[in-house]
Length: 257
Length: 323
Image (cartoon, rainbow over all chains, first blue to last red; front, side):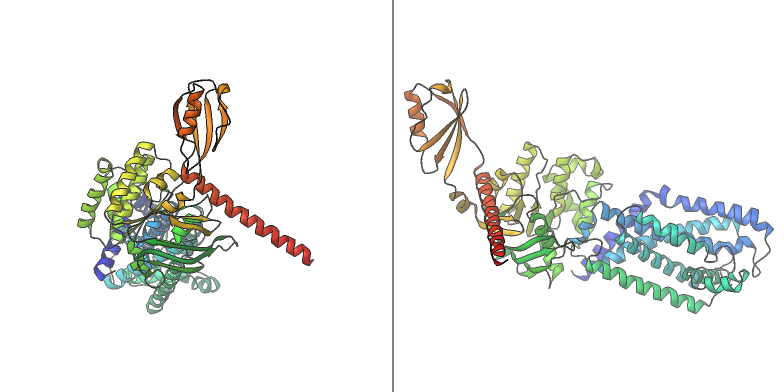
C-alpha cells in the first residue's frame, strides 16, 4: 500500500469509529455528563460544602480534574473494548483482517476512535464542571498532554481487553473490578496526604494516581506526585501496551483461529 | 500464469485437530474453479488461510506469484472473499459497508462511492443502499457480501457457498452475474454443496476430503470418468407388463408407472424405448436420477474413505502381528 492508501485506510477506520459512537450519543456522550453533574451536586455542593479547603482550593474545585479525567478513562476504554469486541462477535473484524491494512494502522484507528470519544466526553464534562466551579487553568499544555495521553493509554488497554474477551461478560470484568476501583482510589476525591503513611505508599503503586495528579497540576497547579515521574509512567505504559497490542494483532491471538 | 498455487498446506489446531493434512491446488488465471468436498473436509479452512483469517501450520501459498508470507499486503489486495457466514456489521447501512471496505484497500471515498453505486445497481441492491444490513433478506445479504468482495476489483474472487439458502431465482441471477465477472477476467474459486452449480459454472474442479486433495482436474475430464447413468422413466401403462430382460441395461420397477434404468454412458436409450413400444408401453417423460457430478463426487469420496479404512485395517493387522 502507498502512503496515501494507508492514510485512506486509517481515516476510514477513524471515521467509522467516530460515527459509531456519535450515532448513539444518547448512550455514549450524554450519560457521563449527567453522572458528573450528579457528582458535582452531591459531592461538590452538598457534602463538599461541609469539607474544608484542600491545598487552598474548595472541595468542588479540587474534585473537578479527577472527575474530568475519570470520564476520559472510562469512555476511551469503553469505546474501544465494546467496538472491537462487537466487531469480533459479528465477525466484521474479518473485513479488516482480509484487507491489506497493516495491523499497526488497525490498532491506531481503533485507538484514535477511543481517543475521540474520550476527548469529546471530557470536553462535555469540562463544560458541565464550569457550571459548578470557576477554576482557572494553570497549564493548558500540560492539561491537554495528560488528557490526550490518558485517552491513548486507556484506548489501547480497551483493545487488549477486547482481543482476549470471549464473551460480553469479559468486556465488563476489567472495567468493573480493576478500572473503577483504581480510578476511585486514584485520588479523585481526596489527597493521598489525608491517608495514613501505609495507605499512601500503597496508593503510589496505582498508576491512575499519577495521571489524576498530573492533570490536577495542569488545571489547578497542585499535585501529590511528581509531574515528570507521572509523564514518564504514562509514556512507558503507552509504549508497553501499544507494543503488546501490536504483538497480539500480528500473532492473530484472539482474532484468528 | 497461476492465480493460485497451494503446496502441501497443513493446518493443525492447538487441540490437535488436523484440519488440513496436505492440500495441493493450482488455479489458472481466468479460471472458474470449483472446490468441493463434504462438510468438514477442509474447504473453508483452506479459504480462510488463503485470505489471511487463519494462520497455517505449514505449506506455501502464492497468489499471482506473490507469496502470502513474504508480501501479505500485496497478496491480500488480489483477493476478494465472500465467506460462508454473514460477517458484516449488522447495524451499518449497506452503502457504508461497501465504502468502508473500499477504504481498507486505500480507495478514497469519492471513488468508493461510485464503485458502490455500480455494484449495488448490478446486484439489484441500489434501492436498499441506506437500509441497515440487518434489515436485508438472506438473499440480499449474500449479494451484499458479493458486492463488498468486488469493491476493490480483485483479480481472484473466492466464494464460499455463496448461494446457500438462496431461492432458485436469485441463485440463477447470481450465477449469471458471476459468469459475467469471470468473462471480464476475474478468476473465481467457488465452493458449493449444489453440485449442479459447480457443473454448470466451473471449468476446473478439485475435491478435498479429510484435509487432502483427492482430485484436481478439468470438469470435462472428471465427468468423462462417469461410466453409468441412471434415468427415471414415467410410463403410460402399468409396470407389471414391462419386460425386464432388455439387453445392455438394468431395469428396476419403482412403482406402478415408474421405472429406473441404469445404462452405460456409451449406449443410448433407443433400444429401451423400442422394447417398451413392442409391449405397447410408451414413455411419457424421463429425467436423470441424479446430477452427474453428484454421482462422481460420491464415488470419489467413498473411494477415498474405503482406501483410508483399508489402510487403517492393514496397519492394525500389522501391529497385531508384531505384538
